[in-house]
Image 1 (cartoon, one colour):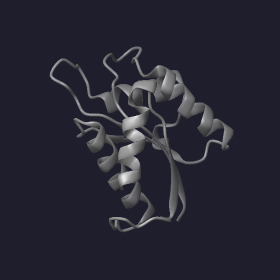
Image 2: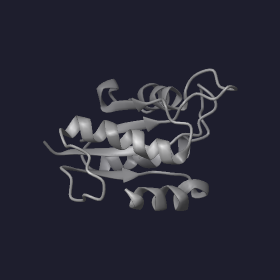
Image 3: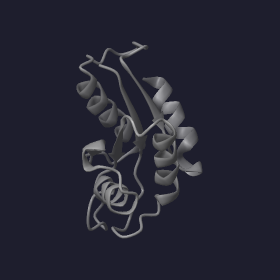
Length: 131
């Protein structure tokens, strides 16, 4: 099975209008350009100062404001760091595609796009290349 995913790491602090709307909007634009196929992995845990997890905030924005079907949004709400955002999201994508995660193995049965803020993009890209 081939699956496409957009991983959107955290930093959403509010339920109504998360600060990450710009990057979510970019992910939605990519999804729409690709015929609304694939799924989103909203990634981010809940900080002590947050009402809901970052993943939940992003899920709500995607489904309520951007009208993305709920079944097209997967949630990773355990992470507390950028590395965990990527690792836990990868586990979700691997499980969804039926692929066993093997360190260092490339060419899995799915493709994904990493959508991050300017502030996080370098670190997130470096971590993603590490596997």
